[in-house]
Length: 422
Image: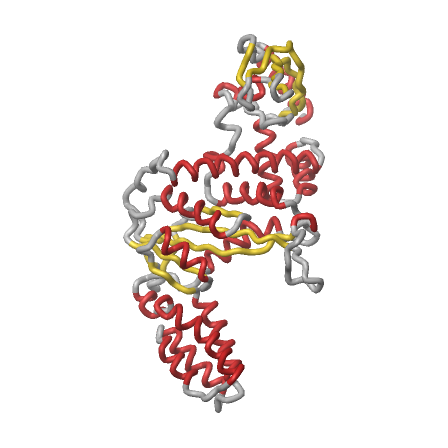
């Protein structure tokens, strides 16, 4: 029954499309290279839709300058550049390809929708959608930063606090993507490329125990493989888009890396800085291990220092560590370990932060990295190109941010009366 209905639907869809014009727009039309393409007759194209294949005649133009051809009707129908899938089917492949491996996505489409596509077709279609989403995101971010687009203030009631958290993780890539890069492997070569992720969310209130509660659906994401400066530009745009400056309090929460605080000071200088308490505890454990040979009761010493850390009394930790006479390498290493606490003392006032109803752990960004990146891009046996990984992560960010419909590239160009059909 499903096969019969799909075949009938495909025939009906083709008849509807054939009643419309073939996209002819005069003897010449603009080409993407900046030149003029000349009319070169009509060419058929078979498009695979959610109902099956349909074949359409399209006016074809050829550009003498760049030696390429184009069909204006492809753009009118919302087809991705060079694509042979209808917008509806391209969106389905993007959803499936962003969610799971391309081979498994092919099986899901076949089993759930009766649509047979090869894993390679799904890969190409999903990555093309992701590339278009990346381009749209970059263009939008640039327009916001340059004030060509001025976002409206957030609707009332404005959430009390906005959090901005950033972190990074390595994505396994092909050897060609790490040529000349040093890494942590036994051979000294890199096997991954770092992707940095930003997560912005709001908090409007506390739960019954006085702990902050993330506003449901308030998280949005941005990412970059191009380093901290590239991420900073995207975070700045997202911060402004989300109404940064209208919230009573902005909090930058991170693991203590210097680039995180530099970004915060540059983009939202009025923000409260908080070092993730779990990373601080790891550094404290490392400090205790360094002094274990000289402290009378190492476990008790660590327990006492942990209480001081929870209270935000970093100076007590520094004083307790400095009282032991060390020399040479041991003294230099102690200076390095205590430097972490000395630089971040004002970011470790955990008792005060808790009284103000603030998060002290960076679980939000760590959870975001797992959900957005690890679950799809860091599975066993995966080795990506950087562009391929970026395209799929772009789709996952788009979906996790609740902006799929807003950013889906085909929707903006698809003719309104064809949306229900294709």
